[in-house]
Image 1 (cartoon, rainbow, N blue to C red):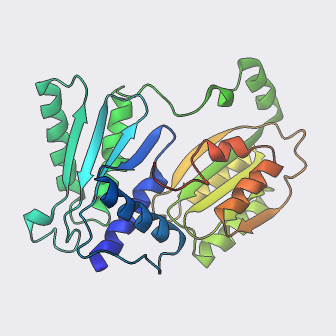
Image 2 (image 1 turned 180 degrees about the vertical axis):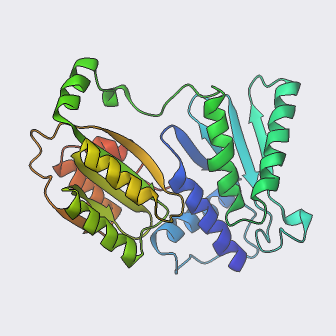
Length: 286
């Protein structure tokens, strides 16, 4: 059960850390896929209560890919991972690189890269999360294997509009993390928002969501302060200009407990597309 909890926590961390245009899915027979989908859904909503389990639980295999990328990654967790992976090579996760039209040399280079990075992250907390989200996916994008940014054209700000927004010097920012529980962090967010005349909210629990809007200078200082703290899987989703001229809901700082409340708040602000396009509000694996 300890291994299962650890595996679910790492899968949850990978899921919540994916950027727009990146996806997670199980690569299992239908019955096994239903078991793991149910387990992960229950772990996302009520971590302390898991559904009844078959004995033994089938080993999990999953795929992470970027939209329109021809290369993708598959990972299989052995039964006793991560508990015995440091002492038993058979319990080290299997990571494969696949893709259409990969040459032998290209496949060899990717395999060498995976092995190098696996050696770096081995022994750390959540090594497969670190491998995928800190090394493999960034390399996939940097090498130009994925041409889709994951953001729809509706989010691209036209040049004329951008100039207007820059003149107003109003910015907003969205950040996500694996969780936001610490009372110290929550008090710091409240204090910084007051000191910097920033409005917005924090969604506490799992996952953590932080949204803020204010002047460009203050938003940039706020984001820098947030990043200076210790987080698990903190992602700055965007920091960009925003038009607040018709925004009647940009006063004060609020806390929410549920993702649904975040979606409703962003709808009231007329900015729900920023949340939904990030995949926030729909955590079930595809």
